[in-house]
Length: 121
Image (cartoon, rainbow, N blue to C red; front, side, top):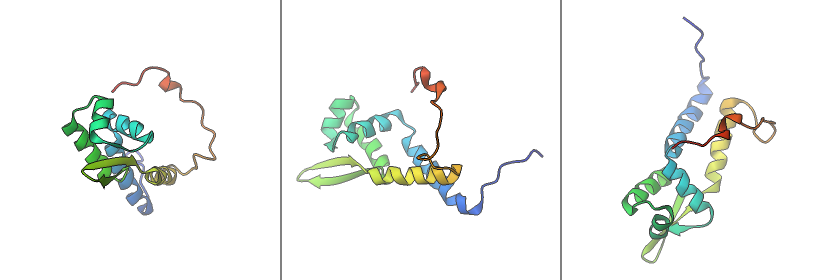
């Protein structure tokens, strides 16, 4: 049989976390939500209007982002405010570096020519 890449035992939890994280980030709507929240915390009503996403669908996406730790929520009176958790993205980058075996900060990566066209949803 052809040589199949094996993941060392210490990387198994890293691969599982990365798989879960990328599942949470795979939806275009979730990336749009994160981009909107990068400007500052917001509630579901304002996000729904800004992103033109129905409130029930937006709430579902926010729940998924919250469960994986990319978004934090806090109650202020009757409304719930959501914000991005920057430290969570540091964990994602650390896991990627561990898996790939190099530091993004130290690597000089060429510009990705494959991204010159439009990105499809």
